[in-house]
Length: 277
Image 1: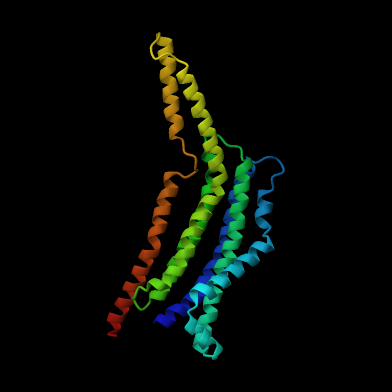
Image 2: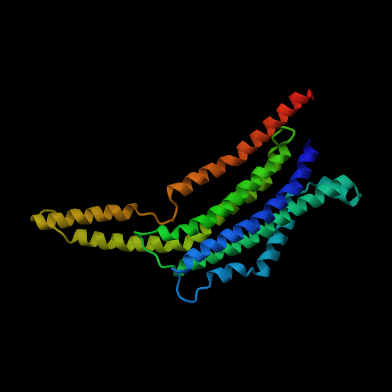
């Protein structure tokens, strides 16, 4: 069952990666078109997303192959590979294919989120109205969904109902930092601009508050109260376009991989008991 699980992984995970490449590219272009009306004239966001730098693709493929050879292939498999063992060769090439497909997609998605980050540098924005900034968060959530789905697909390694840390450790070492980077990178330029604007507003309000007397007539007290309320309102404004819906989906995504493994393991146990194995 362990061997069957590994072979299933070598087939399903590359298919998942290339399917995600097609689907996420289509959704990303839709998000880009929503943003173009808020960008300066001449900003070709859609065109930039469609133009994949060959350098990114080649670096992603190379990084995936190197990661597979250095961190994912045990030394015993190299011996079996050079001896011409068919089973070992299949597993060896399958692991290289899996990580090459991961590197390929990461290379492209890093280019895409980089384009969104550049758009965030020139995007028209308002600290008090951030609804038009949601595509920056949604494009990052697409990448988180890709990674979570890949981790769920990886649970086919557990068809024998045994959780092996080594099967998931090398994947987690890539999945966690990649997921964080792909989620935050498209929003980071917006975050810096919104944070800077927020600090400017707070400084202006604090200066005006400091210029008013602590006691005075009704007009002064009303002005002071309105400034205090405005300061509290500005302090509460977010500097990342992440609403509760995004946070909720993120929490659900985090729970999917362990639940998927538990489901796969329980199903295998049920089948084994039914067959009397």
